[in-house]
Every structure is written in C-alpha cells, then in structure tokens.
Length: 324
Image (cartoon, rainbow, N blue to C red; front, side, top):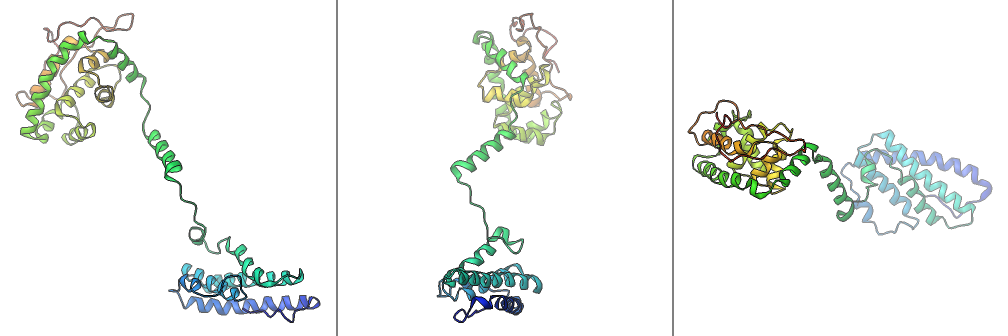
C-alpha cells in the first residue's frame, strides 16, 4: 500500500487516518487472497528485491514478507487478512506519527512493522521467526550431559561401601590362596566357552542363577567380562547376606580392581568355602554336572564384635559348603 505524504496536512489528520485504515483493510483482504493462491512462495522473493528496507518501497517489501509468512503457515483468508491489516496499519500509523513530529516517514515505515513482527502472528512462527540461541558445546551441553549422566547413575549403596572397606582391610596374605586357586578355574570356564560357545555356557548356568540364558549373555556384554568371572560374581552375590548386588560385586572386581578373595571377605563369606563353591559351579558350566536350579552353597562367616569376619580357614577345607 502506498500513502502519499507530500500533500499531508495536520488539520486533516483525523480524516486521513480513518480513510487509511479502511483502505488498509481493503488492501489487506485483496493481498490475503493473492497470498492464498501462492503457497509455494518463499522468503527468497523478499530478499531478492533490490530496494533496501529503509526506502519508501519498504511498504511493498513488508507486504511481500507478510505473504511469505501467510503462505508458510497456510493461513486461511481471515487470519491472512488480519495479519496484513496489522502490518499496513502499523506502517500507516508510523508515517502519521513521523509527520506529526516533523520527521521523514521512510525510516518509520520500515521500522514499525518490526514491532509487529517481533510477536509472531501464527503459532508456528514461534519456532520459525524467533529461534532460541543454540547452546555452546563447551558450557551448556557439557553441563546438561554431565547432569543427566549423574541423574541416571545411582549413588553407591551403604552395603556396597561397607563391603568394599571390609574387603580392602583384609591383607593380601589372607586372600592370596583363594585368588591363586580360582585363577585356573576361571581359565577353564573361559576356554570351554571359547570352544562350545557363549550360548552353551549361558544355558548351563542360567537356571542356577535364576535368570534366562539371554539375560546372562547380556550381563556378560554389559560388564565386558569373561564367563569365569561372571560365574564367580553370581555365586558370591547369591550367597551373601550383606545386600550387595551383582552390579556392585562386579564394580568391586572391575572398578575397584579387587581380587575375588578380598571381595568374598567383604561380603562376609567364609574364604574356606569360596573355592569349593566356585569349583562346584564351574562343573555345571563345563557340563560335567547338571544344574539343580540353585547356586553352589557358600557359608556366611561369623562376624566378631569388632565387625570383622572370622579368621579364614584354609581354602577348600572339608565341609558341607560347595556341594550342589
């Protein structure tokens, strides 16, 4: 819409303003009909014009931009008419106000629609015309990722912390015999799994530990460990009364780099029965014994008044533990 400014006089302001408003609404309706017939129109049409936004021809450019917004949102005739009416009314009011202040209307015609444009006329434009700033990877993204990871990782349980401290308090001399005897057992089970396959070993052990073979193979992948260590972890976790979980047993083994003797001691299990119990379960893994639906039995150590387990007996000593 073009508004003549050379013959404008202040006494005629009221008449001109009313006429401009009516004319603006009529033009808006016509433009809306034209916009509705051009759904493929893009913002490139507006940006390809040679005239800068601050020139008198900015009125035309603002209407072209409004048509782009209308076409992009596929607005109906009435919403389109409203949008164009707002834009042209803003331009008209800016020109009138500039004249009243004895200023050139060109800059006002270009700038006033920006006020209208800062508040999107259609809901979809909230994400199109006013995008939020992208977070910097060094600050916001890193902080969010760290916070999310921390929220997903539960804090260590009191049972785990206590068991870890008990296990680390045991001397290497006390646990050396257990670790020495379990090392070849682990190797035997791992070698058998390499020949017979993961599914075979998982199928033999699953029922003893109360899980499916698929779940057992998923645990092996999760902990990135061998079948021998996973078998020992399940056997110890199934016998302890401390409340320490399988995840926490594996954490002591991998993250805390503790030996199986220290872990068993931290779980308040008799070191004298650990080797026999693990060897009994290893027979199931290798197919020389049948699974009976329960893990090999390991006796719980008697805790003294000082909170430490009883002095361990020689590993593999006679007793009822370790039998299937």
